[in-house]
Image 1 (cartoon, rainbow, N blue to C red):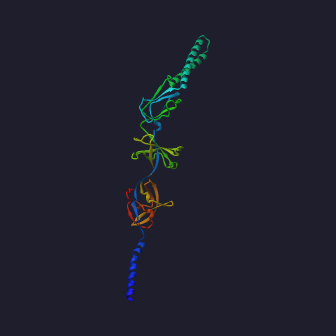
Image 2 (image 1 turned 180 degrees about the vertical axis):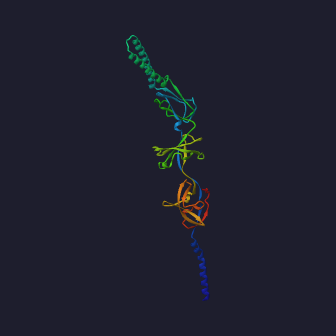
Image 3 (image 1 turned 60 degrees about the vertical axis):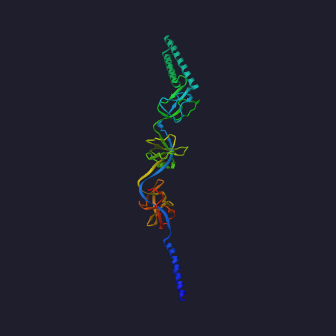
Length: 353
């Protein structure tokens, strides 16, 4: 009987020993493996990304035109070509209508001269009045002015070559050989060398955030390593009907390497703080509109409500609820609960805020 009681006591003790680890585990709870990063204090800037094109400033552009209706005989330059002052651009000749205008002006001038001679002769014979003589003189003056104007606009009636008046670049040529163009219609668009501007497309919802004077970093899409600093010069008040975007013009003090007509990316600095508590963007979680994050204190995760500020796409400013130097969970936070035990490691390849 004693032997049986002794065996039962040993069995009971062994069962108790076997349950000890499980009970201990239940007491401490699960442990989550997370990556942490210390909140740091430093500058942060909110940037608005926009795309646009490189253009010549309006004040640098000019056009070549004919003063009379003309026929295009030969185009001597091409789009994008650099031309020096005095180089030929285009060869034109007067149209049939322009030649007829010149012919009429010559006939009118001849007729007016003959009429003045006739009235002068009659006036000497007392057969014409002072008014007749004044009228004839006036008619001859008008006819000569019309002839001078026709000669200036049409020329002698033959082929003419138009030349570059300064060192320029050919922007576009809206005509082709054989076209008949009206007087003063543009034949070639030119731009002076030495300056370009950037025109960025802004979403209408972002227009109120973009103001003249804001800093902009411009990079061509074909070379993201090239970074040129400029400022917002103007934000247009009208939406472009083709792109459905607002246009913002950017001035660049130095624009070496930017090719007119190319596409660029612009980063507009719309808000900046020189000293702010920053955390990685992945640290922030939301419950409704309330932002929160987890900090680690002595191996335990603690949920903290925070007020986020500037978001630059990588880092987020925390205006309230966090201090610089606190360890913030940046990965594995979706699995956490307040008070959970954690094993923390620094994030792989993380940048310091």
